[in-house]
Amino acid sequence: MTDTSDKSATWIVPVGPDGPQPAGDLDAELGALVGQTESAGQAGRVTVLSRPVGRPSRVLLAGIGDGDEADWRAAGAAAVRAAGDDEILEVILPAEVGETALRGLAEGLWLGGYRYREAIRAARSSEVRLILSETLGYARSLTLARATAAATWLARDLTNTPSSVKNPEWFAGQIVAEAAGRTGLTVTVRAGDELERFGGLRAVGGGSISPPRFVELSWQPAGATTHVVLVGKGITFDTGGISIKPRDGMKLMKKDMGGAAAVVAATLGAADLNLPVRITALLPLAENAISGSAFRPGDVITHYDGSTSENTNSDAEGRIVLADALAYAAEQLSPDVVLNLATLTGANAVALGKRTAALYSPDDQLAEALAGAGAAAGERMWRLPLADDYTDNLRSDIADRVSAPAGPGSVMAALFLRDFFTGTRWAHLDMSAPSWSDADDLDLSKGATGWGARTLLRYLAALS
Image (cartoon, rainbow, N blue to C red):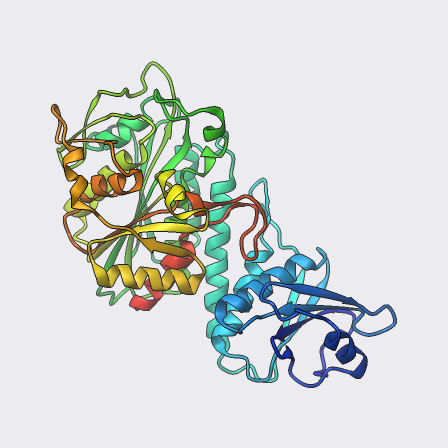
């Protein structure tokens, strides 16, 4: 067996359809035990072997399935969950493990080890060692995995934070603090009179004791030739406003800023990786609350670009704040690509279930690139049509459009947003359902998933 640095450590042995895949031969006793274990190679399955008088005394057989990146990610996440909090883990890797496989494994180990404890990050195991026969060529894989996991952890932490803490001012402060520890980033926070033109953001945030903020986070590396604008919905809590939600619909509304969390995390991750892509993250932050100053159905809202929307549902507030951000991007930033992420509609879950986001874009190439990045990252999406059949539903008698027209809910929200950025290099990701997991599920931990951070980093890295 490959010699390891600590015989008291717990071994993680990858197992494929044809048996164990470590570097070297298993000792006879361990090999016999593995040979008697059925289905151990199923991706994400962990079989625990106890050897009270042997060394190691515990072995975790981690199934890697067919051995693609997703299967290795599942193996890493499942193995770290099967371990104790203070165990030292040594992963005994095949002699010729690929860089992609190693990245998947490392991401799985980090993502599976995530816990949220009052905004304190705590890994499930104190140490994980990768035992390799050859280390050349793997540094980049581990760097990418670490940056991706760190971005996802941050997005999860921000989303899991209770809304009693997470008001717009607090969220903006977190962005400033995170950016301050990195070079090459600038942050502008707008509040009060600086939001005069942001009529949608002011309307949505007008009912809360915590005033709205508009945050602009910029990464401008030297030599960048592509400018990507990332827009994230940042509703720190959503009561539904005057169009109040039922109790069950309100319980998880601390997650309604999951799009903003993913966008922030991906931008910081791009800076950590020094990606040569200019990125501007736009975060409209507001709490949609109920009070005498809350906006009402029937109100007409004037957006950043001067166009107007008739509010027909105060619980369709996300598109209203995103509209201001998209209009700002179009007028002020001259971007090459605009991507917006939002926990926008329940219709997304009805159409695609809990694990898949809806993707909208008029650009086939951009849609294909995003879907590919999501598939590689382990974040599924499905392209839905920007169906012009429904544009007449947007018409208003008293404004340029209505905010929440009749028709297929997720599609109508996308058509509304399309009005505010006329360039074709635009995509909208409706990710309300996959932003939250009801239980630990491979690389997802119960609670916020940080959905989108991984996809965005893959997409941005591919651009470079």
